[in-house]
Image (tube, rainbow, N blue to C red):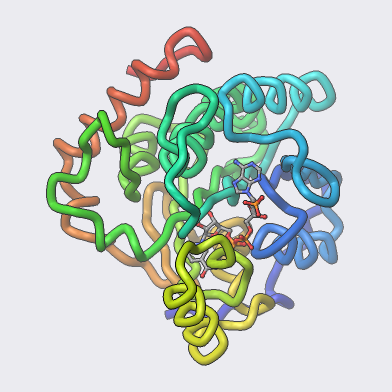
Length: 267
Ligand SMILES: NC(=O)c1ccc[n+]([C@@H]2O[C@H](COP(=O)([O-])OP(=O)(O)OC[C@H]3O[C@@H](n4cnc5c(N)ncnc54)[C@H](OP(=O)(O)O)[C@@H]3O)[C@@H](O)[C@H]2O)c1
């Protein structure tokens, strides 16, 4: 397993970078560490400067964020789809999508596809151009009948199906392990919340180190297109279900159906 430290981050001169939700947690720490290495510009897509006001939950706000970006920039070397929720109460987003699926899967899929033309243009002059997608080892705990499209659950397979089609931009799914952030703070129930606070306190990786998994995926020239990485830089295979080609295709095609009308779809 490669050892990767913050000081191994290369010079990022000329790199234009987007991190979704960079004002707290792993996104903030990723931006903090990358910013010490001279990037041209880092964009932070979030709900507001202190507490997100521009939500990137609804598809229309994802489109607005991507349109804002392409109005300002003609290149994008690194897209980090970091926004994600866990343990929040059940809910449905404005578009009618189950909230986890909307935030963790559909929003990043649309954002990525809207920005793919800019990523591909950048890949012509920088072969290390990439999209890094935050995933979770918890995907291994999904039920066996994983894609009930009327319930919309999440897994690691969507980036894998995109990687099978994309020939110019590196697509890299990554999970950070258990990192001491606020991710579990919205969990319902006193018992569960107390348990999670104790578990995070005792077992979680500190955030400076926890962010290195996605930073490795972001800057290492050795990362392989379509490979799923765990902490830090360890190539992993993901759960059996996430490796199921038929399920990957089923989800990918379903998502393309949902995105049609919003972005050029991928066949
Ligand atoms: N920490 C871990 O142990 C761990 C493990 C596996 C995977 N991950 C993944 O790592 C990524 C970063 O997580 P983190 O640990 O840094 O979590 P965090 O500290 O909770 O930060 C995530 C932030 O994202 C915001 N957010 C989520 N979805 C959003 C959206 N659609 N639009 C705007 N803001 C949004 C949340 O805002 P609100 O507070 O308003 O909801 C929260 O402030 C996530 O994708 C997560 O699934 C983390």
